[in-house]
Image 1: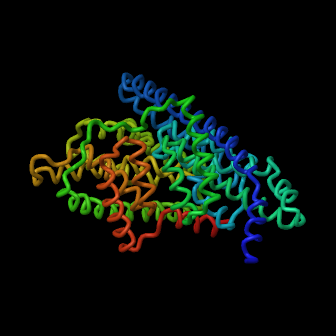
Image 2: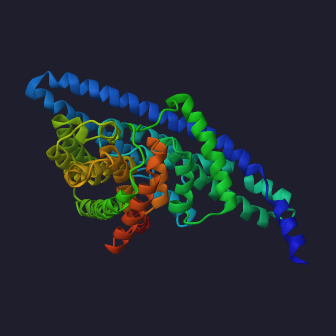
Image 3: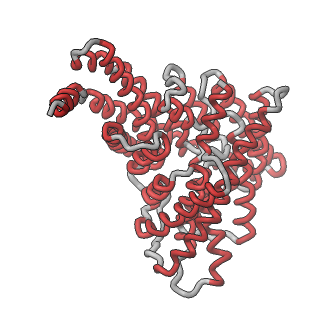
Length: 451
């Protein structure tokens, strides 16, 4: 009997002010993230125009993308080195802040991530837009919580002295940091449910009602505001993909197992590449970035689909664009190596988008190899590409629900949800059995060791 009144009084002390702050901050995340996506789209168009003009200059024109990407990587690296935690994805830093292993950075992080990420990704490095947007979203959430004086507000409403209110206020600021990071992911891929699951499954590993509500408020307002800039079209629309027959579920299970093995290998390669680059102590970071950028630029001169975040490649595979088996193998092998190399350039940029492109390649290749053995009425290449996207993502990140829902929201492939879930389950189990560490756990540990 004595417990109930205490619970009621404690509930009254929980201020609703953080939800207002989450809504305002979410709107800002949507505008900043939407603006970042808009700038990247125009940077891609500009890069395409430069490549087209360079192709008409003969052999000398092939040097233009090499110089372009080398300079872009060097400049982005120089920007990132001036701000702690600005290099790389930033998601590992968001997770470390949630675990109270690191402090939130807000002062110069947002402009460094925006400008550095725009230059690095826009110049053609194999990096994703989601890392910078997630990190910028988290920084906006943390700054909004502090500027909203949540600790002071909670302290006044609690009436128990500043200590209790300050503790609750600090907790709300930390939740806003995490929740608005999820809103950033939602904006990056126009995937509000994916952003929510990302917070619960990947960043925190828990479901807390207050955090869920803050994330919902942040993601809804963020995606709504971002649509004012980038529109509401699907990020990677899938051509007609009916639900595959039930007898194909074991096929997708096997496909998920192979994708999980590929994901575990990719995760290990990312970490190994970073460790090898760490040993090059005599080479300045900016010079190293320039060399990596020059290599990526050379690939771009050969075929632009081998570089960049991968959205154009994924869209081509999902909409029926044909590539030969040899072209699929070449593109898969090159991007498998170019992704970790680009990440080692120490510029702002994420891993998600290149992973999705890698998964689309793997799924399409799997279909091309298996189709002679499959009877009529089997699922097409597009379905395998979608399943591959989610499964490879899961093999690297080890977040199966996030991977499945994120891909469904990006492609509109709700009819493939069952194969997606089965493949993501298989990918998770396979990657775990192979002993691979989830990529952001490895990156967070590495970040803390180097702090």
